[in-house]
Amino acid sequence: MNLNHSVNLKEAIRFHGHLGPYLVLGILAGELAVRLLKCKKYFGLKVKVWGADKKPKSCLIDGLQLSSGATYGKGNIKKFNGAQIKIEVLNELTQKKIVLQFKDALLKKLEEIKTHKDSEILARELYRTTPSQLFNCELITNND
Ligand SMILES: [Zn+2]
Image 1 (cartoon, rainbow, N blue to C red):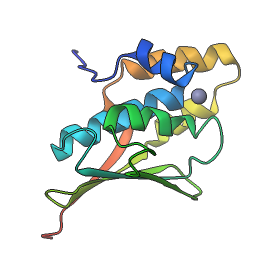
Image 2 (image 1 turned 180 degrees about the horizontal axis):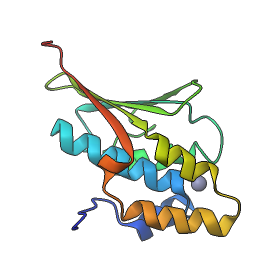
Image 3 (image 1 turned 90 degrees about the horizontal axis):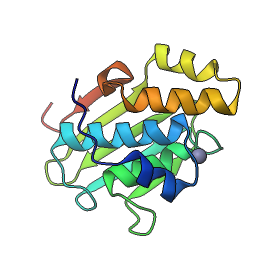
């Protein structure tokens, strides 16, 4: 399976400071949303994130910024309180939206992490995983 990542893992680690599963999940979620919505990185999209306000979950946000190009500096990514992680990406041009949530199997894997080493191993495994196996994905159009 050839997974074409727009974000190189080494560059992501250099930016974020360490490797962890939530960083990788942010990368994958942003890549998936950009691809499915056919939006351009950096501009023309808005990202909202729920339930990622504390470390390590908040590491997700750095991955999302890297892969979507939506950044705090430009103001097109925002985080909100929530019991569970949910990511919403809006293509401003088409007004299509995508909502991503973690699948149960993924949540279970994240819960099983005991050590720092476990988290790095899982992070690398996730980077090689097809995103559709990790996220529940709902496409919302205004024309419905
Ligand atoms: Zn982190």
